Length: 505
Image (cartoon, rainbow, N blue to C red):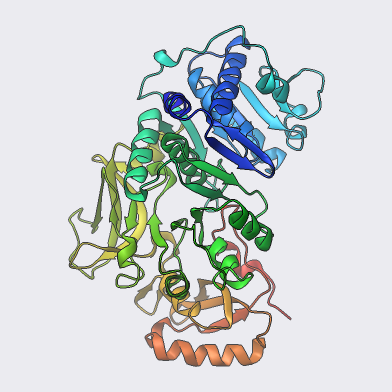
């Protein structure tokens, strides 16, 4: 991966690798910063396989540290820099981190208990820390040179900790081969090239965001970094001013673009492609994007951290004719939908998605039982339930753990959510099962209504809307108006916490 950075810097040294606010970092700059970072780790005593906590926001400093530590033989362990002290300590102890690179806001999370090597600090100097910015920007060559030749393709490169919405976070161990294989596959179907300028709003510590960083460095393309996407109109101004050609986001990003801005009413002559993963993109959003931006290639994708990010993609030409599908396996990835007997299901029958390819993780760190549970006979068992049509296109029906069992029916919440989001009054929603003495569980929907909607009237209208479009057993017994839905840091609804939130008054 470090070699890919060197190659991009050799081909076009002055081409912009990253743009953030008024800063523009060339590939030559990024290569030199990464070389200094790698040398600094080596000078600090890094050994091959040492784990490095990285708590930085998106930016050239993050990229330089990431590629530098990989070149020096380290393993990156990136975390959300806003994580609590307890969660940071858990990961540090679980992965036995030896080094840490943190920003000023994150430093207090380590200061009281950290006993590893000196901390690289992106901020004002503190006793016992090393000045990251001074190291990366030094005008003098580093005293040591990084030699990546000793790194093997099977060596661990990255530990990504899952969000932990269903229990204790697991450390997904990804090798250099895993990351390169997935990056090459994504480059093939996205057709990225050096002229692309993609708005980067997804954090690099997240699997999807990490894949965006890697693909653009490999392709020699430019990342336009926007760390404040909550201010949607500001992000749109950046897209326009920087002639952005690509946008990648999760469903909540698209909900904000469509519901809180004039994105679809604006002209985007440079925009070439958009990608969505991290959850289902509602059919209504797909239809509105296609109608407003027919020239833009919309990639609906599916993946898991255990697959180094991406497992499938739906051809943009089919996003309307195969609406709701996640497509088929990307280049180099085999996908199947299997029953409990391990055989492929018939079209229309529900089974579990399993995946095989060079992108599949080594395993879960320190968890051989958990690894054996999901890696069986060479296949990753994703836990996602799906059907397949007679052309081999896959349609997700939900997670096995999220299935609602009501009166003998097995109900996937996603299908109900897709219909809810087609109603003009619904901005966001989440569906769960609630205990019921007669049926076992009943369907309960939580809805964030648009500001102009009256919750009382909208509820009645919504029930009528659902009864026309869903079988009776899938129509929610309750619709609960709420102001906000609980979400993970990557925008996924925390279904288990829905029942804890207060209804809108």
